[in-house]
Every structure is written in C-alpha cells, then in structure tokens.
Length: 182
Image (cartoon, rainbow, N blue to C red):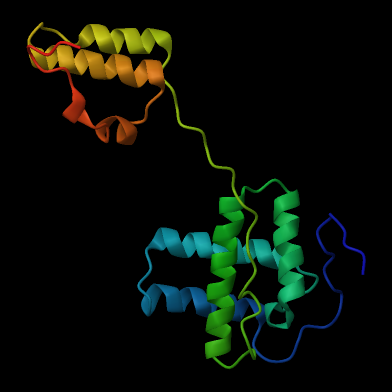
C-alpha cells in the first residue's frame, strides 16, 4: 500500500451511525476537565492534538483508526516538520483519547499503544564566550584564600570545559598543603 505525504482526503461517504465523531472528542475533553480536573491549558493542548489527528484522517470517525493509520498520521506530522517532542505530546493525547474510548466500550483496544515518536536531538550544552569568561573571572574581587579559590575554579572550569557537576565532584584531598614541597 503506497503512502503519500499529502494529507489524506476527506471521505465523501455518509456520516457514520452512532454518536457524532466530534461528540467523542468533546465528551473526552469534558471528561478531562471534570473527572481528571486537568488545567485549561492541558485541555486546549489535547484538543489541538486531536484536531490535528482529525485533519490527517480520511474520515471523521476516529473510532475506525487502527495502529497502522495512527503511525501514518505520526509520520505525516514528522514530514510536516513537527519536532519529536511535539509528536510525542500528540501521541500521548491520542493514547489518552483512545484509552478513554476503550474504557467507554466504543472500541476494542487502544490502537495508539506502542507507537513511538521519533527521537529528538539532544541540545549541546551552552558554552561561555571568551569575553563572558573574562568578565566572570574579573568580577571575583579580593585576594583572600576563598577569592583565589573561586578564581581558580572559574579558570579551571573554563579552560578544561568542565560542567558544574564535574567541577563540584573534583577530589580536593590532593591539594598542595602549606609547607608541602615536591
């Protein structure tokens, strides 16, 4: 079966018998508001994700979708340029909706279970510029031992590219004690 990158066309067939397709989504969103007591922003986000799903399906009856159709919809979102985290959020909303439909007896099993979003790239840590590091090092006033220690830590962290966790986990037992000669 060939897949296409364009949205799936709407079906010109007669509306399905039983509850209106939009009624299922509306009832689910109402359940989120009243039973789950979700925040208004959460409900709006779930509504947006379910509207995206409806826009990607050939007919308005979401209860007829299977796992294969949901995978195609997730792939379509990826082709449209949505980030992996946004697709993961949409899949979470879809899983919740289809899980609710299954609990209501409207479908047999949740078809969204097991569908994974594409992996999101992990951002690289932000590094200080040379000028920012110099400003930070110059900001540390004083010549007392604590100020010298702080200045040395800043220099060490910047010159070695250490992260905070690496810097604080250094073993300080082997520092040069007063009167020590090598």
